[in-house]
Image 1 (tube, rainbow, N blue to C red):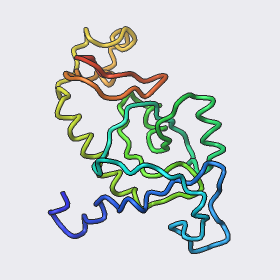
Image 2 (image 1 turned 90 degrees about the vertical axis):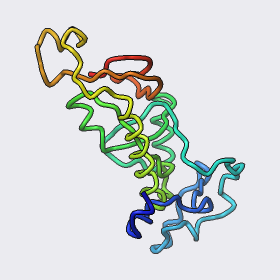
Image 3 (image 1 turned 90 degrees about the horizontal axis):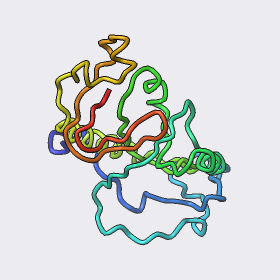
Length: 189
């Protein structure tokens, strides 16, 4: 993708040193109006982590918390995790979408849902999610599932919009209550 043009260079993986995680009880230094890179934040409050062995993207499977507001507070993040369970990431775009029809959400995770919001990783995360989605779609049969394979509700309503697709393959996502895990040869509705 990156070889197709200079404009796509924004989708390159940012340098590892821009991936900064601060201690949960340390809030962003709001005194600096120009701080976009946390240069004025206390470096002693950075969480020291072992460097990753592999610089490429990693795929995680887990619960996605979907809501109507950006989470930029470690207090709020912790509260949600305590109430909902072990949340992999927070997102707002799919919240309304998922209430209208069943779907799989593939997210590119770009920040830590804290006050040190770092936009450096957004483009890379989007490109990575797009690549994962493209790979996922290679395993989905594009033919609608037969009515006999639909859930009892969908079959009784004869709702053609509820017709799903048959997934042939392994893996994918457990996105929590109200959603599903895709495993071997399951139907997606």
